[in-house]
Image (spheres, rainbow, N blue to C red):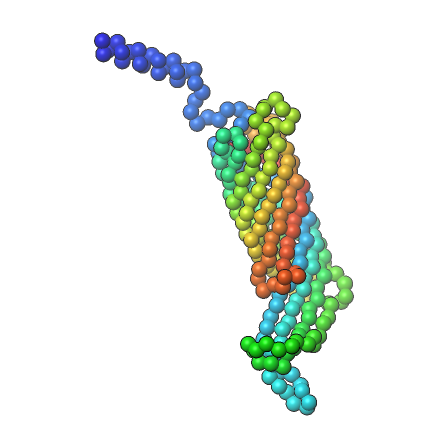
Length: 253
């Protein structure tokens, strides 16, 4: 009797395994398992950056010099574009509904920079509060300069595919978001080759559509926006960075 039961169990298991799909192999046109995406975008970047420096100074006062403090603020207003800005995502697709992934992008931008600086003085020693007076304000050449910017972003994100019906024309619609850190360095094309850089915590948002071209590969496009709050020696009025992009995407999984 035990042998008969064992044979029946083996037969049922064999039939079940033959009729069920192989474990670990995602169904066609579904986001499950390993997920990767690369995109190449037309992107426009604009930022307001600043640099504040406080130091001790000596100022003329009635024929003599007194100890005081000096505050110098540099202002940078940049606007530039690029193609391509490249982005890569690697992660895992879950239940054909979402993908969780690492995000990395990089771009080289060409544009223009408005630059000026202001110098303030105060006849008080460092650490004391007293009124400031504007000692000097100058806009370099009173016009924009060509500038070239390198920027990169790295972080974690997720992409959601809310339309499950494979026959729907909206199948492949996605909404994505990520958080991370942005770094940039901009060279100003001037005689003294001025440069500015900064970094900060960022978020990215993306909305778009993909179409399957094989069982596990899709192509599409996305419209994205990214914002960074700059935090290295900046003033509140000049501490933001933004990128608007239109990307062409290739997704596996």
